[in-house]
Each structure stands twice: as C-alpha cells, then as structure tokens.
Image 1 (cartoon, rainbow, N blue to C red):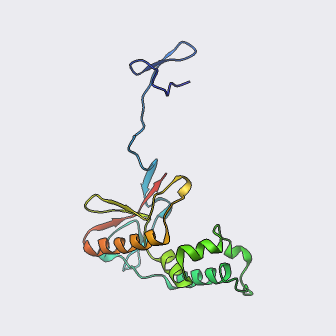
Image 2 (cartoon, helix red, strand yellow; image 1 turned 90 degrees about the horizontal axis):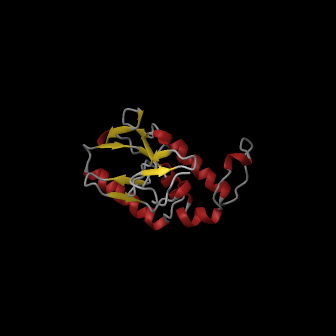
Image 3 (cartoon, one colour; image 1 turned 120 degrees about the vertical axis):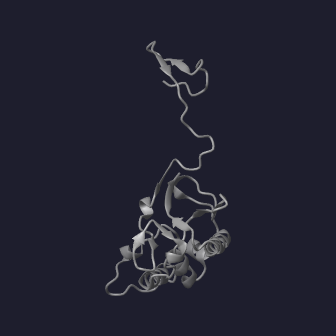
Length: 179
C-alpha cells in the first residue's frame, strides 16, 4: 500500500512486508489534462485550400468552408430527430440515433441551420492564443461533459474567428486533450 496521506518520512515509505519504498509524487497540481496528442482522435480535421487533410496548417492556408454534404446530412438529422420527419426508404432509425434529447438540441443550437453550421464548421472546444491565453466554450469535466451553453459557445466561436483572422500567418494545430 502506498502512503498517499503524506505520513511517509523523507520521501520513503515502509511497506507491510518490511521493504522500504521510495515515494515519488508525479502529479502536476496545476494540470488540466491527463494526456494530449497532436491530431489524435481528431486527426486530419483541418482541410487546406489545396484539399489536404492535416493536423497543422498556416491559418491563411485553411479551407474554412463547410462541407455541403455533411451540412445537408446534419439538416436531415435535425429534421428526423427534432421535427420527427418520416424516414425515407433508404434511411433507418439507427442512422438517427442521438445521445441527446430533442429538447437539448433545440435549446443548445436553436434552428436546424444553426445546428448544421456549428456541427460542421472547423472549430475546437478551446484555443491557446499567441498571447498564451486559454479560451474555451465552457469548463470541461470528466468524460467529455462540458458546461458550455448556447451563449458561451456563440461567444467562443466569435472570439475564435477574430483571433484566427488576426493571425493569418500563424499556424493552427489541432491537439486532442484528454481529461
């Protein structure tokens, strides 16, 4: 058993079997994430103006347009899940499974166009600015649960765009942070 209550002496702990063990606390008390990796689960999220999918690109080289097919798919998702539209012949109920209730989707995103735009535009949950400021939609908690709201997300997205427009020659890197 490791002594986690600081009753060990001078960085050593006497185990039940009589062996002395060195105790090292490798925890960062100021940590925000337990691990991170460039790209990771969001690898190739950035599409460049020449069509390449990458994890890092100069901001001025990024294609910020929304993929039309993905946008239309999100519109259809909202129509079925929120507006309870009839399924088409080629669709199945499993295509429209959602973790969220329709009331949440309405309150969080508003209309289907706003939903499709926010879901499909290139964006991140948080941004580290050149001024070393950490900006995020809300506070991230365990299991990826966030307290962001429609308002905080709208404000973050506007700030995100302003910062990226301010630094077109800087590089944008997608980092997958895990909590």
